[in-house]
Amino acid sequence: MPDRLPEKLPPDPLPLAASWIEEASAREVQRNPNAMTIVSVAKDGKPSARVVLCKELVADPGYLVFYTNYRSRKGTELAANKNAAALFHWDALGRQIRIGGTISRSPAAESDAYFQTRHWGSQLGAWGSDQSAPIESREALVRQISSRGIELGLSLEEGTRRISNEQVPRIDRPPHWGGFRLWITSVELWVEGADRIHDRGFWSRDILDAEPEPFCMTPWTSTRLQP
Image (cartoon, rainbow, N blue to C red; front, side, top):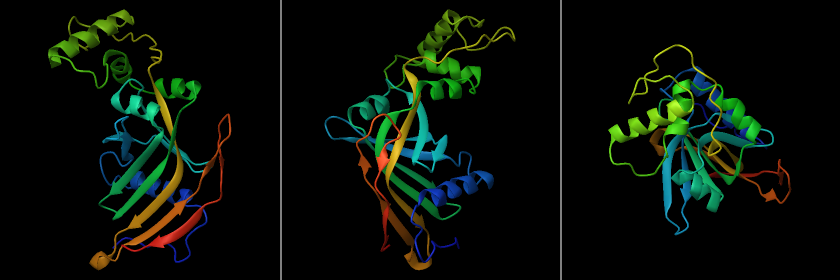
């Protein structure tokens, strides 16, 4: 049975949340222990959810980072409505983290630096795929990616993503691809309990208007929730 939350909830939940992510990664409890579900809301009020990878949780001042195509469905929805939610769930640990907050784009330099750590195939994919846009077939997608790779200076076998030599040129980050920061205003830490007597702690705070980032935050308030 998993451990429980401290009897006295900590004043700031984010160090504990970050330690849970680190533990899940260290123990390799699943293929992508940093996987999380991100929920956005369209202009018509309809929500949509998808799984992305959390690349960083910065406990102070309090945001998490993920990367995507800014023109994708989630990218356009998050640009139009900056309210978003995230969910981590580790069945093997009997834990989950629910997060709510507001979205901003990561600094360009941060996105540039992360992009250069990616495998060249993933870099090419960011240029080659118009994420969320329709396409007539997988074959057409491969041709499109191959064509764009050649435009970037990659030596690819015609109509494929297979590189024909070992010389991979530097691929710069496309301007339509980069990071998002989810600035955290609510956190629920959940620990599985026997007979559904789960342990739930909830924290919330407000973002104060401030430019540029980092935003100013009010102190956390906390409470326990019934399962």
